[in-house]
Image (cartoon, rainbow, N blue to C red; front, top):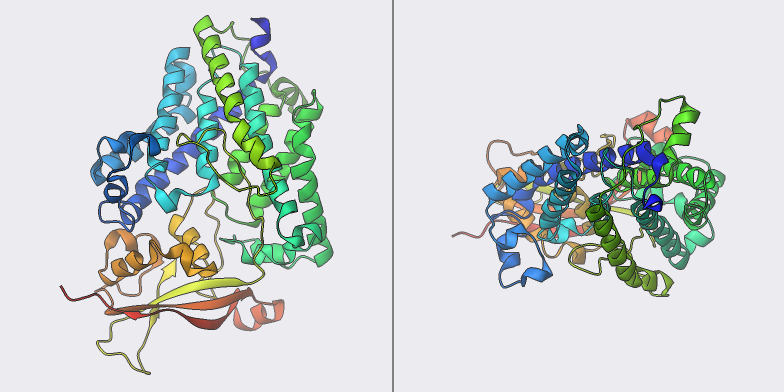
Length: 477
């Protein structure tokens, strides 16, 4: 079928697939390095306990059949290795059927992880990676031109990411409508980056322009993704530029990078190569085999049927953010920051090696890798890598209810000196032996002014608000 493929989108598919594989590699790497403390057999939310009595279709994946920490580690490292191989071109070097198998394997492997990740994997970009990864199964490889239908499905996914985020803002916090949300957001976002303080200190009229531009980028530009070229490519370029602005202003794991990758589904690769003076890539490929056409048509029909739920959600006044309507994380609804915090609260965890507590007890602070803690430490860039504990600590500062399931086990592991938990931290003030007591206090944080920064060298100023967790010790066995 001549209409089945898009001959000018080979370069676009190359960038899309290699970028997606790279993000898969980052996701698997994060799972391998962080799982023991979070969901391992002795973790804060152990997988075996979560799966006990849970029907397979509620959380489909390989770990329903078998779980051990060794098996999870091997599974994660194997996923990372497979993703790196695809980045290096493995999926283009094999027959089409083998390429389909490789992409399907990546999707199944990461789906298995997400479905046992519980709270730690409850972020919208997990479902976004899985939905994009599922569509990549049907993009083909260098032996065929990209299927038109799959490119349109990629644009439909990108549209839901952007338009859903735009709608949730307009329906949510009033500061989005009066253009004042960025008076606060750069300072109160979950994990600031090295340039976030600079963004926060921009003049307020610039912040208002930022918000207005965001509304255009999320509510107008996504519609243009479905228009003829070159308008669709221009719309994709706008999406890419706005996402790079977000990359520079904060740490949002792979959300922004994956959105950038998806935008290439709307870029006319041949035209872009001509504009940039690049050689055409790849050379025209042959027609797709019939079995592949049938597979793509079936996947398209599935996405069309499943689109009912996110469309209904977007049209609803009670629109929900970042929600999956099925256990396979296909055709989800997206959106972020429907409301904006005006004040930043941080939970500071401290320990002491004193046997008896009193007014003179010396408490030492645990340091995290990404979240603000030491006021003299400048925020770092971690995205697209996802520091899961640091992100959940931000939620804990908003309300203890967000941390009810895992904060107690986290403190217990600090008291026990659990090596896996300590590896998630940036600084352990008790390298020789674990503390006798641990406590947590809630602080209000704000960026220092230029004068304060010059006088003290501090990036943050903090004020004690209240006790978050009174001193606790391990119960004697």
